[in-house]
Image 1 (cartoon, rainbow, N blue to C red):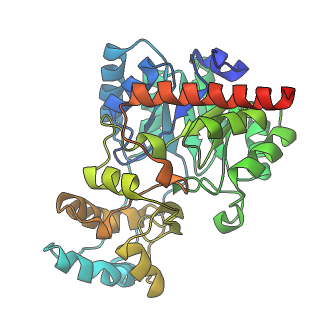
Image 2: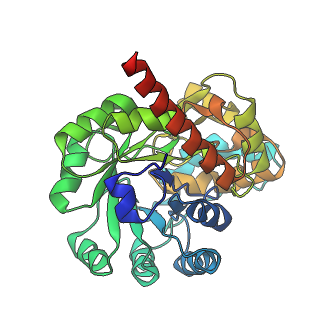
Length: 363
C-alpha cells in the first residue's frame, strides 16, 4: 500500500511524513539527507544557524540526494540590547549551576541574541529549498512574495484556529497544527501559549474544519497508528520530531537519545527557563528547581544565550541536569532505528492500521 495525499504529491514525497525541524542540533544534515532520501521530507531547524552554515549544510544534503527538503526559522522579533542591571536576576539564578560545572560566572549577554533573521531569509532565497516553514510568528508580505517567486512552498505553525486562519489569510500554502503534546518550543504568537495547548487530535480536526489549506499534524505522533489517526481526521501529513531524535543520524547528544529510550511514561513538562519561551522537554533538575524558585528570566531569545554555555557543558559532562531535553509527550514510544528503517517501519505500521480499521468496518 502506497501512502499518498494531495500535499505529499505536491511536495514530491513517497510518504506523508515530515521529519520535524529541530533547532539546536538534532536535525543534522545527515538526518535531513537520510529522511529525504527515504521518501519523507527531511527538514532543517535553522533558528540558531548562521546563513553560511545554512548554505553549506543544504549543499551537503543535495550532494547526497536529489529529493526535496525543508528549512524552518523562528521568525519572532528579538528584544533590543538589555542593560547589565536588568539581567542581574537571570544571571544570578543560574550562577550556582555554572559553578557546579566549573564554568566562569555567567556574564551579561548582548544583542543580537540569535543570527540575523533577514540574513537567514536571504540564505533561504538563495538555497531555494522545496519547503520553508516559520515558527513563533508569521512572515512579512514582501518576504513571502520573494519565496513564492522561487517556487518554494511556505508553511507555518498554528497552535490554535486563529493562527491557522491568519496564515490562510496571508496566502500560506499549508498549516502545521501543533498540538499541546509536541516537544520543543510552542509556536504560539496570537494567543497566550498556555491557553493554546489543545491536543493534537482535537486541534487537527478544528483546523481542518476552519481552513481550506492542507493541514499537517504535529505533536505526540510516534508510530504508524498515530499517523493513521491524524490522516483519518483530515491531516495530509504527519510532522514527527521526537521519534527521529534517537536515530544514529540525529545530532542530538547521546545522553538525550538514551534518556528517550528509557522513558516508560510521559515525563515531560513545559518550561520557559531555557530560552524565554515555553517549550516541552523531559523534566530534569534545572527545569524543576528553576520553576520551584520562580527564577527570573530574560525575554526570548536572550535567555537562550544566558543558558547556552550551561547546556553545552552539561552535555559535554554527560549530565542531563542542565540540558534542554526537548521531547513530546509520547516519548516512551521512542526506538533506536536508522532514519530510513524508521520511515519504512512507520509506513508499514500506518498501512497495517488502515487495513485493520477496514477489516473492522467490514465485520
